[in-house]
Structures are given as C-alpha cells and as structure tokens.
Image (cartoon, rainbow, N blue to C red; front, side, top):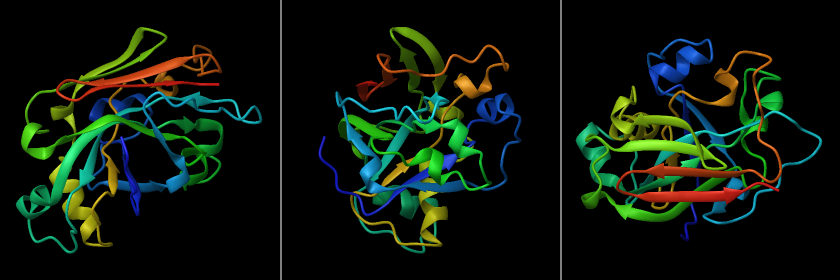
Length: 215
C-alpha cells in the first residue's frame, strides 16, 4: 500500500472500554495527537524496537484515508464525503516514553510506529457505521477483539472536528483509536511488553490483515 500523507493524526481513548482499562474517562471531544511521517510503515515490514526503551505496546485501529481536501467542514456528511477509504493500522507505542509528560508524541512517533495496510478499501465499499470486527493478535494469540461501531466518535465526526483546526489533504491518515486489550491495561506485574521476534497482526472485517514482525 503506497501512501504519502502530509499528516498522520491519531485519536486517543476513542473506545469507552479502552479509556476505562487505562484509568481514564471517556472524553467529551476527540483527543488528537500526531505521528511524524517517518513513523509510516507498510504491511510485512519489519519494525525495529530500539533497545534503549522497553515498554512496547500494540493498538489495533481503523484508519481513515482522506480522499479530498477538507477544511472547516460544516457537517459530518461533508466530512464523510471527503474520506476516500479505510485501512488497518497499528498505533505502536513506547509507553515508558509516552507518559514522561502530558504530550504523547515521543512515545508514539518512533520510526515505523505507524504501520498501515495491507491496502485501502474505497469508502463506497466499507461503512464504518455498520458492524466490522476489529482484532489484534500477537504471535497468533488474540489480544484485542471488538467492533468498530463501538467507537465513541465516528470517523466522520473525527474528520469534521480536525478540520476546524487544520486542513486535511488527500492521503492524510487518521488513526481512529483502539479498543480494550492493550498491554498497558493489564495489572502491573502482569504486563508482558512486546519484544523482538513478536509478530503483530491487526485484522478488520471487510478490509484484511496487517502483519508486522518486530525486530
């Protein structure tokens, strides 16, 4: 899957179950953060885990891909029409870096930490407002299992919200949040962080499976 976004934007805590498991509350408006473009990785690409960090986590996500420019959208319908397609994403996170401050950027934007794929399904062939199972598996063991319809803010609502602050350009990516089941949500002492040799697979019904090996 080839994509050259001007922006990679992400939404935090967009599933109530995930907000609760990490000790947070469901937000009243989308929580937006970003990744740099060199965090982008493709299906099948090996992703390096720097040995000087340690608390690596997965986050299975539906990713909206902008099809046309959107700025100051007046309705969710306008925003929905500007979304060109959807794909799978993994918002990889270095948790020991993420929470050094209240800005999450340094734990979210390591090289390769925004894998997407295996392809983009056109918006007319995928409706995120209808049930589609989303799962994450580590070494073949399912660790996240939910449905995209359980997002707090829909893809269209997120795109409209972001467009009030910055233009969304064709090819821009929006990671729309992850369901419960992340390692951070496990009790302390029971967290088995990702390590070199692990394979993470993110699957969304109607799109496919994104696979990446960690090295």
